[in-house]
Image 1 (cartoon, rainbow, N blue to C red):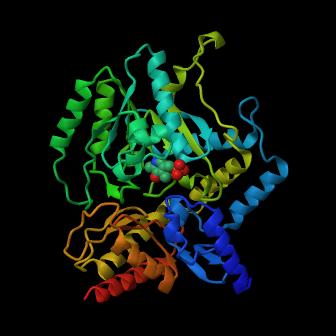
Image 2 (cartoon, rainbow, N blue to C red; image 1 turned 90 degrees about the horizontal axis):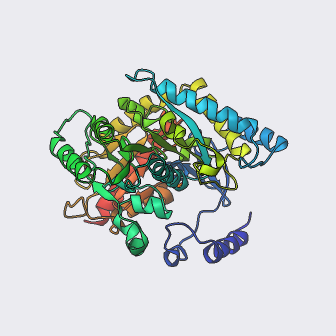
Length: 461
Ligand SMILES: *Cc1c(COP(=O)(O)O)cnc(C)c1O
């Protein structure tokens, strides 16, 4: 494709495609990267440049791009059946994937004290909706259990659960919510105690007491707790204190509140295990999964419910206890086919082990390359989810989401000079690579950041 074609496409892109979370006025001044092809961890643009996808196409990529096995599964399914709606019929890919997923989750929880009961898969098509579904499920559950006063949610500071109204209400990243605040419903927010160093244990006792006080004071009002287990993603990769999820579950039990884990980001091995809640064997009542569910190929999400939740929706038609939610493309067969192959490959290729060893490598390499820079805060990581806080010139780390200049400069340098696609969240650089990434690409990512950081430091002198 010639240069003229690029120019024309770029102009059209800037005027007719409205990009998410993008300041289009600023975007109009850039030279957009227009991708035409993907292979392995690399994306190729129409100007024949090759970029390493170090942010996993917004955190959903598991196997790199266009993995032949996933492409084959998609093509085969498309030749058979593109869509049939679960509203009135079923199809084999939806049945097979639900079965496989429930088995795989049970395997993750096989050492739990009580036998796992998450076994009912509700399909939708994006992570926000999976959370929306979970919240509606919890409200309808409480209502049908006769607990009609339980209409509120307890969520956590800095949490992110998506961009639809329920999910936005549950979220607490102020800059995303602020302009819509008057139209959102109130949630109670508790502290999400962060633990950056996995070996450093600080007491979370006071947070726990606050949490219990919050719950106890509204005992008959709260329907469910909604939390991102192990690590909060969108607020800049904030790891949760070890054991804390178990404590939350204890209070949920004690006060008869449902526990919803939002695993849209952490699910499908991002932090190591298939689902992060299983790290401490804390089985929720409802679990939301999205992002990596199709390996990063097609939009799909699920909300998985426990037996107890599922049972509360049974009754005769006239009782209207059926779950009142659905989407046209729920359980799309092509997406299910991709999800099936993705899950099979997770076991065939021993993906969990790859995440573990590459995560260790990445951590070591980052510490060695940039760990001692005065501009780098404490690196936060669980599995292949990494956040690198960039301090401003005066050493301040908590500048907030709006002040992303330095992190952005490093990412721009990495993209332009090293051809590594990175994206900051405020002043935090995030690394969320495909999960089958290899050592060589880990090196590429670390070098790109390191060179970007050097340029930043040199520029500020
Ligand atoms: C990305 C994300 C969502 C929203 O998923 P979308 O598919 O972007 O709607 C919800 N919760 C968490 C934890 C996420 O990281």
